[in-house]
Image (cartoon, rainbow, N blue to C red; front, top):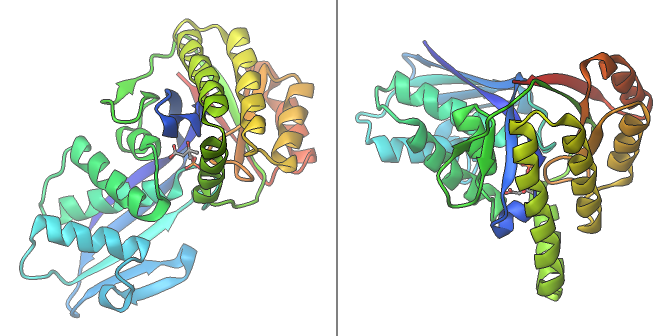
Length: 308
Ligand code: PMV
């Protein structure tokens, strides 16, 4: 049996504007992960079990554009494995779906790594990243590539669409609390809505994206130099610009305000928005009150993640 896993991720700064070429920062979230194992079996076929989505099927009975089937078909095509292997593939994930934690990209990365090592078709991180980006494009329209990059390399990244991956240096440990609204919201829709706004008034939205890009750059320096207070302010400023893009929601705004009132240095929604997760930057001694405030303001779940 061959096993592989991949972490979740969270975007710290720059979502949406990153689709328009501005920089963004994202970090892996190892408390949640996708796990895949692959085993040889005697019965004919490639049998997929993904109990989280209630899927138990042979590959060829799935539509070819099914997200899991498309990864396996593309892998088999690329690796030219012959004869076709008889396999059982078990897929499990603790990453909530459509909530900004990168569940789709993490399943693809874990599945590719398990297949590539089981079938002895070596893939570098760059290969896995490029392949996962192609799969993201099939299912999400015009992704920037930030999800596949941070999940493949499993390191904090400073990301600019189309540029090679840059690792983000972390000057001092940062405590983040991730709060889940429990509302799943497809990123594709919020990305399409922002595109409509942009098409209707490009000068205005280009300048909003520029402001987000500057915040992401300043945040990079603040993270590298351990300037937490400054980072907190930048977090709040980024949230305000995401509200202007109409991608926040009352539930996200409520969690962001609750975190700030409970003493967070700053807070913002994260990812596609309209639901999913928000993040709060806190001093280590403030974890408990902020977690409590998030829970009593409707957070379904919280994750404390230390970035160092
Ligand atoms: O919803 P998520 O975490 O997958 O993030 C999407 C981030 C966007 O900037 C909105 C889209 C993208 O492709 O970068």
